[in-house]
Image 1: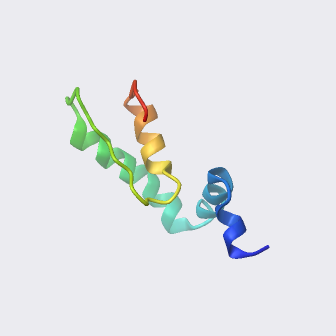
Image 2: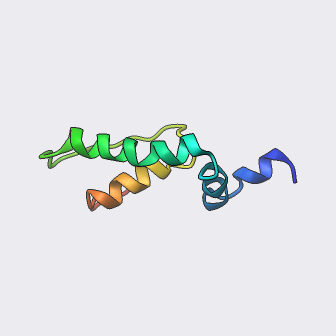
Image 3: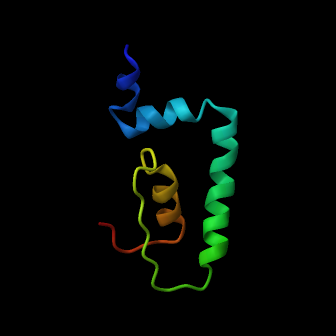
Length: 70
């Protein structure tokens, strides 16, 4: 399997990333910081450009119950 095969699907990529202790430990911290800094906001526009497979963005939108995805 070539390196590029790890990136053909976001779930496969995420499973590789979650084996990294630094990544697995950082994910809850990143999400909690995003929630803390947007607390009380009602009209959030979130952009995710070239940020891996968008796992942080996807997790954040689920936790804050974003109604509209583009």
